[in-house]
Image (cartoon, rainbow, N blue to C red; front, side, top):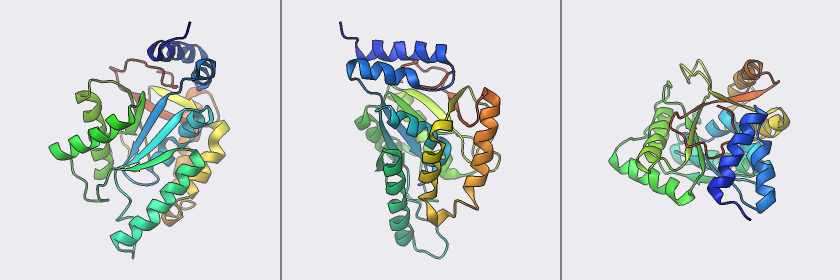
Length: 253
């Protein structure tokens, strides 16, 4: 007898709990009955989802699950000396290249880098985008962050989860910890050692951001530190929303 989607996802959660860090259980079940998880990773700018959870994204897609990376903006203010239009073209192409490396689908929410809004209209627009994806799991940025766009992304995602009836599991990720993300105390970890090079390649697709001298050295230290915390070599860390239904997200709370 075939399992329902919810039964399959519930069993995934139990198996992941038994296995600890890592995500093999959902993949094994998906191969049994052909079902796939649908994952959305929301980030303020091109490079935020890749740096915060690129290794986890690669683990999902490597197991055949579907991942959409939802960028709030196109990084319009992110290249000194370039107009917004010029920077948007460059950074959109970089995001598309990174998504191809991660085997994820890019999606853009249409807000402007450095000028994002959180209001009723933007809440409705963002929820409509998420509802169309029908995700099982969503990852978004942690709201206590020095960058306004990061905070906006988090609040827009949270509102979509809350007012959409909490239909997906919600997890928060960190970027540039200490410099941007603040007060981040993980509940969950994913071992990314097997996908570390894929993550690195996706991050380095964002050449306009000078990854070798800016965000990559810091994130290398972060993933090594999170690995120490959970007993592996390299890990990404997450905070689970306390009211998640545990639909099978491949992280251990």
